[in-house]
Length: 320
Image (tube, rainbow, N blue to C red; front, top):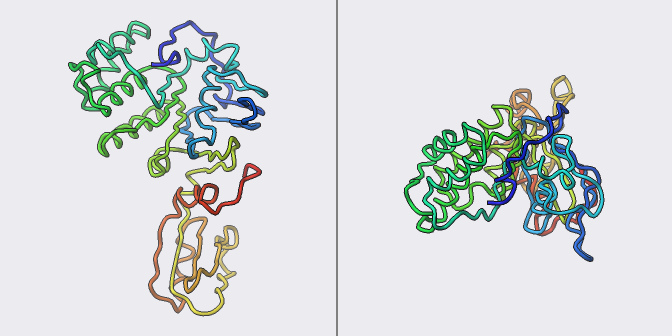
């Protein structure tokens, strides 16, 4: 495991600021390559914040800067009011980190791995880790070297999620897991949030991010290009129907529609209506339209992501 998962130093007293993670102008260059470019980023306490972007977008660089493994080229990053680079031991004491390539002691049994970490943590760690291993259906009697890739991922999850830290940083936490266990991991992440902890959740699996996260940040070429409130996105629906002629005008007598008007456009022979709010104000009007083959579906995170990472999307030049 990485150092942040092992750190047990006594840290300065925690702050009570609303945001547990704050970056200002955070930049990291490797020679002529700018891996992260002037990022301003905050994560409120008690939130699950997703990080989305393809390989090379800057997610891993951001995480390594937050954990103090890299020195920023410019700007700053703080966790719980502490400078992530100059005060990294204290930052590690407040952070539980699951790396995307977690490595464990090959010659130890699973139970011995958890005992090792228990010796570095608080008195309740061993019981929490054993309980998590049970929920993940993990056989702790096996040596790590004899475990499958999925079993080793379960062991790493039990070791990290048992840490009583205010911030969890999870990099691809469900990699190599079957669908049932993936669902249990997402439940554990939400339980951590409900207990007041903050989770930074980096994943390539869009439906998991959509299910688990409160907000999602989309990265592209080292920049933050979009911040999505998931509560707002979950209220949005796409309505598609066969249509002839110009797009209709929604009724102007509905205060709800006037306050949150739908987007209406033609897509070939289809009329597409994006409802940004509740469907109820639209349903009566839709029933009056001379159309058939009506389909209503959630907009979904994939549609947002494709705005910035589809093959024909234009390079982003600002955060939206």
